[in-house]
Length: 197
View 1 (cartoon, rainbow, N blue to C red):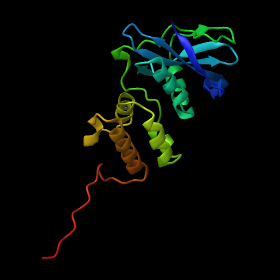
View 2 (cartoon, one colour):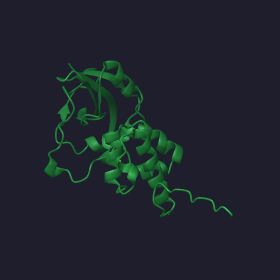
View 3 (tube, rainbow, N blue to C red):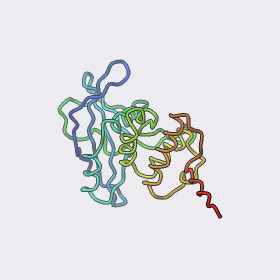
View 4 (cartoon, helix red, strand yellow):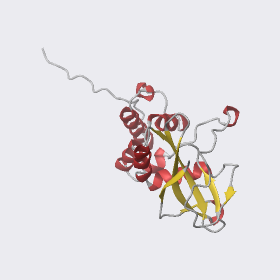
């Protein structure tokens, strides 16, 4: 059975001036893993849209930890990804149960050309390198690889690294280099010092 884990106090603007209130929802899947998604309720009309699965965790406590750690940037990105969704449902305001029994289905392969990402690394970088590193550190490896593909950051050896912290540093370095006009490839190895004989 699906449940609402967190109802956020903030409202986020969408197209046409609509404001959406987010909530994090979760359910125990058939495979014994917990999956989490986000729902956004239009504060004026009550229409609710949902994201696809945002996380899969082994326990309810783990998915609760994920939900309570979501940043404003992450929620804004999830709203942007959810808005094109075709499936929308009307609900009465004040509902404390999730509208949907699960996350939105993944779009078919023929509809997707590039992955939709949870954040734009160049926009976040404009707020500071530390902010970008912090936001990226909250994401798993799949989300980080989606950002690398969607923003054309491929090419470095680290893009296929299995460890999320390596991917985070790779993305930060690539975004910094492009934003600041540095064309050196990542990672740049320091030149060995010349030794006099």
